[in-house]
Image (cartoon, rainbow, N blue to C red; front, side, top):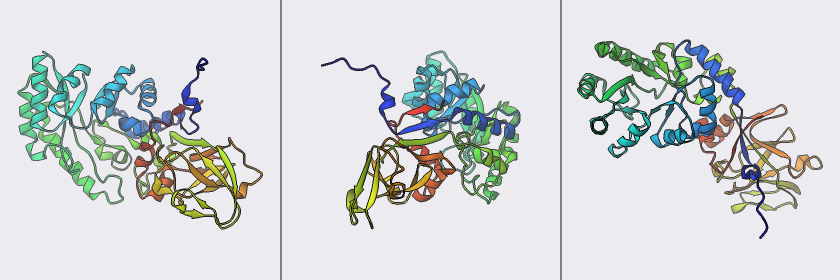
Length: 381
């Protein structure tokens, strides 16, 4: 057998997520201007919302953002092993069996149960270490957190453990991206009252604001802000009207290339189940992207892509690894190897993650986080 060529295998995968770090820089400037002098703790969970956590974390560090948020300690540990030197806040609760891992990496977990608090204190005592935690209070998310009326008891328990350092008290908004902000304002009132109630404990940070609250609820900014979706140039919801949101630039484009062009006759069934049948002789392009790459099968026969600066309809059921595009109107102008834009801009046309989300009856968060690991993330040059 001949020698295997030395090649970057990522270059062979024809579908790519292009990461625009200049857009990330711009977006962080927009967010920081809105936050003023308050620190931002960027959320890079779920592989930085699908954008590649290593790429995003390195760039955020270069911009001076040194406290990052992940959902799980495994996400943060992977980044540390890749050389990311940051303070990590772990947003999701974990089990007692993982206490030593949190101590190994000096991560700052969010804690909201006696079980986790005791496990951390015992592990830290055994290892003669201290651990910084952030206490989560449930002001209305209904997911995790100490009840507000139990916060003083919980703080007293924390203070009785010399191994426990309280780095902050936090909460989260479930409805700050809606037009009706009355529930969110009730949460703010609860949280600010709690802040006054706990003044004697000398808590260094109170943080509740997410991307939506950063733009819509200035009274929620407090001591620090945890932006997520807006960093990546996407709105928390399409209904939000804050003018600064229109300044954001999408950090990701999703592109592919045509691998096959095929002339078919009228009444040709396309793809599994023949969801689409041609109504005239047609030119069909195949592109190597499917639900295995994160393009949901529920989008079949419902979306456009961009080829040659024109909108072209995807037809038939989206397969695991490929899908088909009707390019009949581009006959004589389109070639194998041409660029196909699934998310992004080509010429004067743009397709956004929100466009796909609307077709899929979901949110832009799901569109970008669903892009699978086999799609290489390539930094735009």
